[in-house]
Image 1 (spheres, one colour):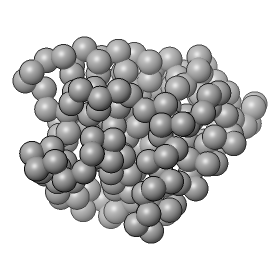
Image 2 (cartoon, helix red, strand yellow):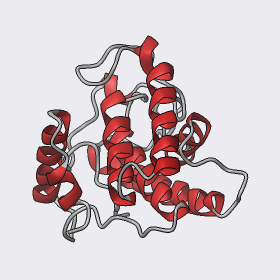
Image 3 (tube, rainbow, N blue to C red):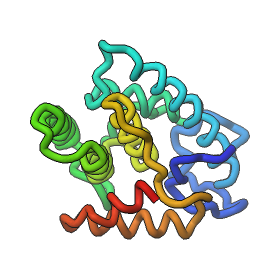
Length: 199
C-alpha cells in the first residue's frame, strides 16, 4: 500500500527488522522493512480518513495536543502498541522527553495566534506547524508522517488545500529533497520547505 506521506525510513527491501525496531510491534507476520512499510501504509490511510471526518466537526481543535495524540494513534495503532504515546527516551533528534508537552503547548498557542492575527499566510502557518512538530519529535516513530498529516488537516480546517509534498511519485529522491529542506528550516530558512510542499 502506498504511503502518500513518505516512509520514515527508505525502503530497504527484505531487510530484517532488528530487535529495537520490532519492540512494541503488534503484528507477528511483520519480519522485514517491506512488511512494515505495507502495514504502516494501510494504517496511515485509516488515520487520514479518521482525520478528515474529524475536521468537519466544529468542536474539534486541529492544532492541539489532544488531536495530535489521537491522530498518531489512529495512524499507527494497528501496528504499534505505543501509538499516540509520547516517547520517554532521548533520541538523536527532538527535544528532551520532559520538554515535549511544554514545547507542544507553546507551538499550538503560537499556531492559534498566527490564525488570530494573520501573522503568516496560511501555507506558511502550516509549514511552520509541520516543521516544529518534526523538530519536537514527540513520538517514538512516525513523527514526520504524522506532522505532514497535521499540516494538511490544519490547511483543510482553515479553508486551504492540502500540500502536494513534492513532485510525484514520492520516491527516495523526493524524500532526500524534503530532508534537505527540513535541515534548512532547522537553521531558520523555511523558503525551500515552502516551495517544496507545493511542487
